[in-house]
Image (cartoon, rainbow, N blue to C red; front, top):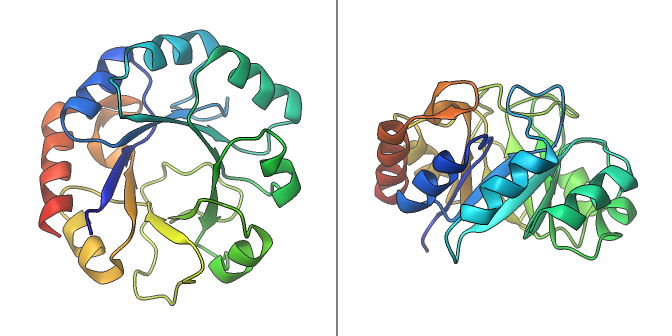
Length: 203
């Protein structure tokens, strides 16, 4: 099975195009204002407009309210929603979009989140504490027992020099990288993204 690749925290249109051209299956846009990789609706629309076909645009939210999510969806062509906070299954499902639920593995229980979100398209396992935004670069224990009820996307501290090991150990549906392919927060590095993609396929 081919491991899918998501590059998250895209803040510039040229980085979204570059990620896709280097092999990303999806890009992530962060709609969480405290994040260093936050984009407003106008910038998000600019990025989404130039993303090539067959590449998914994922919108990341953390404990946003319904109106905030709907405002984004009304202006930006989002393919998938990704929720990083304490959102209930009912909240996540109300938008009529498929969604991914994040699990903060530094204290979080993926089995509990899986049970609470049976209709989530996948669980994204990140190295941060529950309720944090991600992008911290923290790696979780890849040897932990993981639920088999959902597809698994691995995040948290992935870089070109360790992602092949993560793929070999976990055999995830996908991997998600943000800080590990940057020259500075929110600015992606083409050589790092190219190396990351190569290492995913080697894993």
